[in-house]
Image (cartoon, rainbow, N blue to C red; front, top):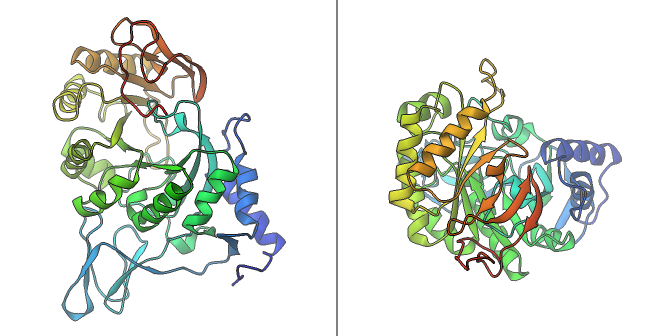
Amino acid sequence: MTGPGARAPDATRRDLLRALAAAGGAACAARLAGSATAIAEDVARPGEGVVAVEEGGLAPRPARWYRKLPEDWVQCGLCPHGCRISEGERGTCGVRENRKGSLFTLVHSRPCSVAVDPVEKKPLFHVLPGVPALSLATAGCNFACKACQNWEIAQARPEQVKSATLSPRGVAELARRHAAPLVACTYTEPTVWSEYVHDVAVAARSLGVRTVVVSNGSIQEEPLRDLAPLLAAYKVDLKGFREAFYRSHCEGELKPVLDTLRRLRRHGLWTEVVVLVIPTLNDSVEEIRDLSRFVRDELGPEVPVHFTRFHPAYRLTNLPSTPVATLERAHDVARGEGLRFVYLGNVPGHRAESTWCPGCGGLLVRRLGMALLENRLKKGACPDCGRAIPGVWS
C-alpha cells in the first residue's frame, strides 16, 4: 500500500490514467479546464487531500444509515432494498459489508472515475449553463439495468476496478483547481456511496463549490433528508412508468422512485427528470402520457423532462436505437399534457435541445449536444418578455 507522501509506481499510475480516461468522459470539451487525462494525472499526484493510487485494498468506513439486528445481522437503511446482511456478507450493491455486526462502506474516498464534464452532460439544463462539473464515481449500484452504459463500474465490486484514494476535501480542492463550480456525483449510483456524497458536499460547500447528484432515485427517506440541504440539484433517471418494466429491466421498483421525486419537491431541491426511451419497452403513448401527468400534477409543470435516445448497450443489444420520431412523439405528448420544458437528448442539433421561453416563445439557451452555444437569460428571466425561468442560474 502506498502512503500519502509516497510516489505511486509508474505502471500503476499509467493503469489509473487509462482507467479514469476510459470511464470518466473522454468526450469532455477541449475548452474546459482539464481533460479526463489531465484530471486523472491530478488525482494520481500526491498532495493535500489526495494520495497516490492503491492496488486492490478496500477502505472501510462506518456506514451512516443502518440498524443492528440480533446475532450480528444488520439492516441497511440506505435504499429501498433494505438489505438484511449477515456477518461477513454484503448488500445488493456490493459496496456495503457487515463486519462483526456493524455496517461499513467500502468505497468512501475511493473513486474509480474522475473527469471534468460540461454540466449539460448530466444532463442538467437549468443549472449554470455551460459550466464545467468535476464528475466522479465509485464502484456500485443498487439497480441492474439491462441497458446500463457504465456497467463496467456500476455493476462491479470495489476490488474489481482500479481506484484512486481521494478525500472529500481533495475532491473540493480538485474542483477549485480546475475552475469547476460544481461537483457531480454521477456515472454509477451515488445512493450506494451516500456517505461519500455527504462528506464531499460538506467539503465542497466550504470552498464555495456546489454539489449535484445524478441518480436513479431509489433512496430511502432518511438519507435523502440528510443530503438534500447540502445539494444544489438532483437529477433522477425515471426509467419508465410501469412497475413491470422496473422489475424486469432494472431489478428495482417504480414506487420508491416516485416517492423520492415527491420528497425532492417538498425539500425544495432543484430537480430534473431524464427518461431513456427504449423501443417497445417504455415508449408507448399511454406510458409517456401517464409519466407526463405525474410530473405535471405531483412535481409541477416547470420541472424539466429530458427524453433521451437509447442506443444498444450492455445486455440490451437486440433492440435498435430509438427512432427520432418516437422521441418527437414523446415530446409532443408531454407538451400536450402541459409540461413547459421538454428536451430531447442524444439527438445533436435538434431544436428540442435548446431552452425556449414559455411566455413569448423566444430562444433562451441554445445548445448543440453537450456544447452551450448561447445563453440569453438575464438574471434567470427571458430578456424579451421578462418571464422568470426556473432553475439555478447564479
